[in-house]
Amino acid sequence: MGKLHEVADGVWVRQSEWVWSNSIVVRGEEGLVLIDPGIHGAELNDLADDVERLGLPVVAGFCTHPHWDHLLWHPRFGDVPRYATPAAARVAGEARERAQTMAAQSASGIPVDLVALLTDLPAGGGPVPGELIEHQAHAVGHAAVLLADRGVLLAGDMLSDVLIPLFDVRQDDQVGAYAAALDRLGEAVRDVGVVVPGHGAVAEGPQVAARLAADRAYLDALRHGVEPVDARLGSHAEWLFGPHRSNQEQARRR
Image: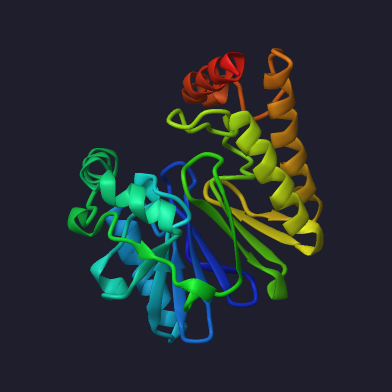
């Protein structure tokens, strides 16, 4: 829903019309790293225009987790390595055909042949700057990227103002996994002023703590078997009722 804009030094965000998805561009020592670029083909093409205007080469991609909407690419970004955690890269490879099908069905103009081509992130992070925070909430091998020197956390599909915590139905005890992940992210954001979620608005200042509090309150409600009071749930977001009920069912089984 707009052009690439800088949210911190060397960190740019462009939001898609599809579920408020955020494409992220980070300046590293060797050049630009594209994180979770999406969604529609026309938007990827526009993102390529924006990236070209930055005047630096794209040296790598990074996928925060192996869901189809985070596995996209465009030829104009270049034939460069696209990294993920080893667990995420493995899952993406195993489910590549399914991810391609979902991408083709859900978004227009996607270069389907480029979906889910990932490789393991090398030790030390290679060209991807910052510190990786890997956890098992939401998806196998999910990783946030902490850019401590810039006061930024790239949260993947966590800490959203529009999405409730969305459990991975293939993993047991997502309540516990989310709680552990939020504890780790909470430590990471103590000195962070900007959080970029995979979907939704960028959080700044006191909004960062508010995002953590909202997700923790949601999990506490599930633990106690009560309906959460959550602004993200309502008539404006009926499509979230199904995932919410699935979350409740998984929490009851635990």
